[in-house]
Length: 343
Image (cartoon, rainbow, N blue to C red; front, side, top):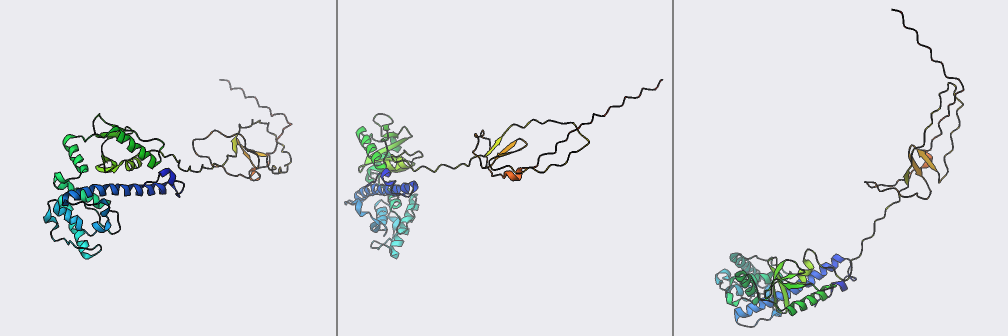
């Protein structure tokens, strides 16, 4: 019934689509399991065999079985006046569904949203809520295990070979590289741990290994795939493309030494501006050397913040050289200080 997750990944547009598809498959499997449990309860309740395959949308959405189960469970006053020959989609079927929802509220159970075309899992779980309120001797085995867990704090143990076989099947269905490790918390106990996680009650019924997790019975595959840290599958997820980083074309050099010449009173003629440096040369402005159209230098140390490279025009940054000032005259003599007057 299952298709391994690893085999479905290449055919999916994304990993999220594969995950959603596989979750739907597992949810349908949980629905089949609950059909077996509900059929077991209805067979004991009506003293007649009820096949799990017969619990489809046609037999449940007309509300006849729903209201009849509440009546047979010992609560006929909650479903008084329901229609036994209602047809799906008719006003009588809609009235039966409203009566069933009212009975669930009276029993303190959660009422599902009954809409046409929706899955049947919420309805099946609501029927088990009615079974929990009914006679204990007619409850299905799964609910009897719940009662034993509440009374004694434990459930019957499961054979180790059964746990190992269920783990191998789950690994094959999920495409895991290795099966999960399922251990009993104590010898002879039905409380187990999966991969050394939290303790959970386990039950093997109707050829399914189910775990009581979060107040709900889930199959082993559904628990493995939806737990906070799901196991990795044998098919790796597609890697995200690596980010592209633009090269940095600026380098910092030490400032050039500055020489000071004596000041002259005679200024030389003004020289013509120097032409712009050719492509591939460098123009020094203070302590920053900007390179244009040349091979990048050795990379700079990574700064604390992100650096964005910019293209700078060398011709725009070039400036004419400063005029050179020379002096041939001797420096002026400093006059001597006048003597202080006599006292």
